[in-house]
Image (cartoon, rainbow, N blue to C red; front, side):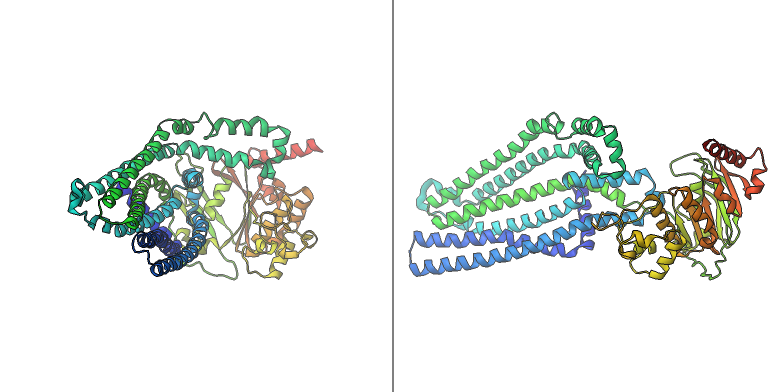
Length: 619
């Protein structure tokens, strides 16, 4: 990566951070300038005290200088502490907002991207880079702080060292008079730049091994994230113990794949080339130290300035050299950070391709919405096989439709298209005769209440889970829970609707069973009160008694909505007006339960007899 390309990437990262937390930049600039300038002020005032002690020794002047030095140093220290505290506060705030940058992007992505492995891999790479070394967006903040601090440090050093170069040695000093020549200044400054560059190059070469080792470290971090915290996952706790996987799998893999063990590449690099480059950087810096001492002391010995100025100039030159080294290192680190920023930006630059539409869906109190699939085919991005082929179906208003079929027959994909999580690759889906792509995306989605098979509840109070928001109607939430069959929720939840679910955020949280969670999810769908209600395996986690209760209340739950069920339990289909039988991506049968079981060669009849035979054997 070229230097200018890296600068553009880091500048873009700063622009992102500026939009997120502009006060951080203000705090860092003020704090960095005060931190860089404070040592120079102390150096200058200390030099004046030493100068007076070595010269006139006037107690009154010395007392004034000491008092002024103490006062100024105290004020600068206080100001420096206040600004550093402000900077730490803003830095901590920015650290929290870092996750917000990626979270907002994830939530704004089309579901197609969210459902793709490629987008998740990019997100995972960006976050793993940050976890193991902070490289990427977070490192851009560190580099900005280093750049501001080093520039302020260089300017302060130049200001305090100018008098040293202007101070002339008396002609009576003999051979040392050549130090008055401008060439000596050029030679010293040139030497400082060369040493700073060489030191920076050595440091960059050494740090380059860390960058080169990024893939192994990311993988090691992913293993650690999974296996080290595996015991925290209650779902795996029983299997871990029954099969002793902690000893047989987790510990073995962690030891084998540990990226920082003594036999790893990075340790070998540290013992070899990387260690040599870093040692070379320190050695070159030590050489410059000797040159600075010789130059300053020779001019003082020749009579160019006094003892106090020696303290000032040596300290100023060291700070100047340190500032130059920091600047060079920061610029070099910008290049290495650029490749990690590319990964982060590749994720942040994923563009949404789904057309958002402009038409507003009609708000109908009578729920008179009709949906039609017209010759719809679909295949998932990156695949060549159609999951759905030439699907044609019209949903009668207020009807109850059941969707059945074997696994992989296209049932869930059909629901994803209906909810417009994906758009078909062929054909149209119509709402009241208009292509759904023309409707505003948010308006169209508001027409559906969905309970997915892998639904998720949140570690929030029960009422907020049901309503899906913080502000809600308690009466409506209670009514939704009642209709969903969760009649004893007041006994289960000690604080009623204010009872937190799970213990992730609150020690008083209540862990609900799978069946209770399913009822809460159904209540959430009812609370939304959308014209279409979609239930993907709505009773999968319920026992037979609870399942029967749900179906007994089926008509009351659905009301005048259009309802769509996906179910493997064909007994539930008897309550539906129409059953759609999917097989290998096509609707192969359509009708009522009584009609379909009469077709002895049909897929539905085979599924029905298979389940009936199973239950008969069980009985």
